[in-house]
Length: 127
Image (cartoon, rainbow, N blue to C red):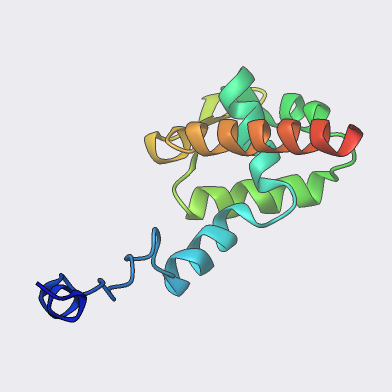
């Protein structure tokens, strides 16, 4: 058989493109940024993962540089997003504790992955 005949009967190259690993879910990215993209939100989630449930003063003490107003607004926003639960633990004096909901606690692997990524990136930069 001639080489021309072999070429004509060989299997053509595949021209399919691999499916992307991720699709770009713009709405999902917007939702994620709303929840986690604010300066204090991931920090609050982190401290509630590590130390929670925590009272307002304990949380404020864990977050260097946050004002009471900003902490209150951030906690309200995280409550609205159903990541944080607020519970009144005593009436006199009023004492409130904040804890993560199941939805908030489900962020733990993402927080761990982000912290690992940062540690690895910092090591690469140092070398």
